[in-house]
Length: 401
Image (cartoon, rainbow, N blue to C red):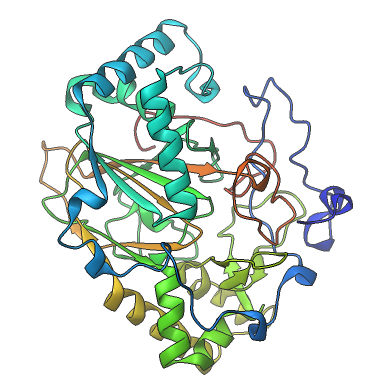
C-alpha cells in the first residue's frame, strides 16, 4: 500500500497535479472519480528473485480443466433471477436517475441473487477468475433496459470506471470503421482487428453480447499464473525481463494536463507485503505504439530481448488458452489481475444486419474492499485504474459513438 502522503503528489513529477480526490458531485453523480492510469511506485516493485518459481491453487488453472466441463464456468440465468433483475431495472428506469448514477443501493436485488453475485465476486478476484452468464434477454429488453440491468449487476461486483478519454463508463466493443493499423491513435476495441492477449485497466471486465459477427470475434482467455509457471519452466530469462520496470505503455493521447504520454512500468508484479500474489498488466498494442517517441530519443526503443519476450509471452498464452464463443445474451466477467484475454479478428454481417456489438464494463475493487494490493498510489481508491482525463464527466451511451 502506498503511503498516504503520496496521494497528493503531482503525477509523473512535472506539471500541475492531477487529483481524483473530492470531485464535484455536479460532474460525478456518485461522488467518486476514476483515478486513471498511474506508473507504479518504484519502491514497491520487488525483484525477480522474490517471485515464486511456481504458482499453485485455483488461479493457476489449465484449459483442460474447463474445456469439456462448461458447467464449471457457466451459469444460465433462471427465470426467477431474470424476473428479479428485470424488476430492479424497471424500478431504476422509473426513478429517472441518470445511468451514470446507478449504485448497488439504487439497484436492490433480493438476497438470493445478491448472494450469488457476492459469491461470484470472490470467485473472480481470488478463484479461477472468470464466469459466463447465459440467457440475458437483450433482444426482448432492448438497449436501454439491457444497459441498466447490466450495469446494475456490475455494481455488485465493483465500481464502474471510465474506459476512455470521453468518460465512457459503459463501453461498446464495436467496429466503427477506425484504422486498426494506426495503433498510436486507435483503440483496437473500436475495430474488427485481432486483439492479442492483454489485461484491461480495471480489476474486473464484463462483456455483454448484444449482436454476434458473421465470422470470428471469438473469445480466448488464459490464466496469467499458468503462463507465469510455463515461462519460469521454459524461458526463465523472459520471466525475469517481464518483472523489470523497463516497459513503456502508451497513453495514446488520453492524458490529463501535466501527465506524460507514457507510463514506465513492469508486466508482472508482486503484491506489496508478505506472500504477495503475482499480478499482471499487459497489452502489446500499447507497447508497440510508442515509436513516435522512441524515434525522437525520448524513450528507449524495444530491445531485441523485449521483442523476443513479447512473442514468447503471446505464444505461451495461445498455447494454454481456453476458447469460448459468446452468444447473444451471454455475459462474460473476468479478472484482469490474473487473467489475460484475447479476441479473434472478425467480419460483420452486411447491412442491414446489425454489427457485432458487446457492451463493456470496467469494474474496480479497492484493496480496502477485498481487492488485490497493488503497487500503485490509488490501490485503496474505490474507482482505481481506468482512464480519466482531467474532469471529463462519466457518460453511459447506449451504443458506440
